[in-house]
Image (cartoon, rainbow, N blue to C red; front, side, top):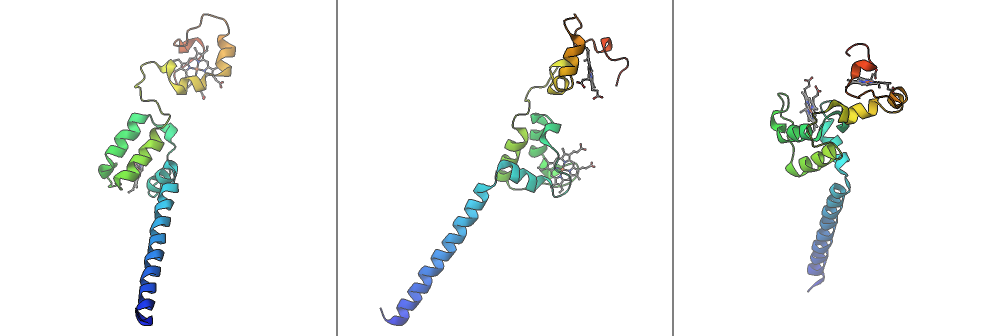
Length: 137
Ligand code: HEC
Ligand code: HEC
């Protein structure tokens, strides 16, 4: 190989290495993004990033399954990111459709210490809202 040829081989090798590094660092960047990071990126461009606590898991699933017709808008993005977004949104959320108000997380949260103090050892049933609340809400 003459010097000129060697030069071009070197350029080619160097170019490949640089390109390769570029790809590797791009790949690590996507991998390094948490499910939450992806959800925030995809779900806050048009509106407030709604906290996942606001809806049950099956509602988030329905939302992700219908992103191409999202309240009249096309909010779709790539399937892989959709899966990560759903994982974040649905994590820890109930997958049950509740029948009892008194067994929902919301009720339990609102009826912590204060409720226990009022109910005490009495026979007041949780479902008897009127025992403690005068009117409907
Ligand atoms: C292209 C814009 C766009 C993107 C991206 C988008 N949304 Fe929306 N979203 C809307 C519009 C428009 C509405 C309807 C707002 C209204 O009715 O006032 C909406 C409404 C909602 C609502 C109902 C709010 C309510 O209680 O009235 C939820 C929940 C929601 N979006 C979740 C998401 C999630 C989760 C993502 C990401 C996966 C997302 N959105 C991405 C445009 C978008
Ligand atoms: C034994 C008494 C008791 C019963 C029964 C009860 N509650 Fe309550 N509730 C409370 C108390 C006390 C609080 C305030 C809790 C606190 O702040 O720690 C509360 C808080 C709430 C709140 C929040 C009010 C606010 O301003 O944030 C709502 C809504 C509510 N209850 C609805 C209900 C419903 C619906 C039922 C029936 C299914 C019910 N409660 C049964 C005692 C009761």
